[in-house]
Image (cartoon, rainbow, N blue to C red; front, side, top):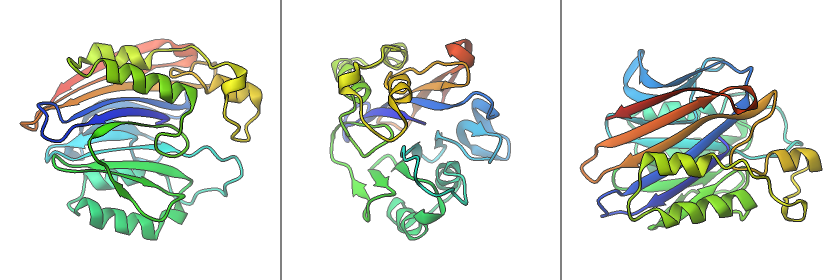
Length: 248
């Protein structure tokens, strides 16, 4: 998952609103959003290569999602980051206990941002920092750097999310995620991948022959605990493959 914008509004009729794009190589096999057969209380897409996921919820009101941190110089990872999301959704540890465990072994994974929440709290953890943060009410975004790092696509997506918070709808959230406009060269970050790649990755929705946005997910959580999730799947060059809607 390479871009997540979200509104956390405790006490609101819709306390959590999420719009997220998962960017990955098209050749990496995965399954779309569904109830997991081997863990029926988990609702998420699934990475078939390592068994984890990039974003999901469970029947107990848990939410988890992650992005990678872009750093071409980091050492190879021993474990897949997707298991961090899957283990939280499939477990029973409190958020702070789980994050303490993750913090103690984050070196086993390539760099990542992790969002973990329940109906009462939402936390962010960046593997390059030492302490997780319990988030206050607000509109946030995370891509492949730190929380709210002002990359052009993140600034644009956050602003679009904020404009639609009076009446959030899945279709409008998915529209935010479909923006394929790249940023001007002068506004690109320098993460060590070269100008051409920085440009390709600078749009909210990424499309190329080999790598791009594989899934766009809209999540609306209601105060009574019910949730609506809509996921669109994409193939090479952004070709649309299907759509899944779940009400949980």
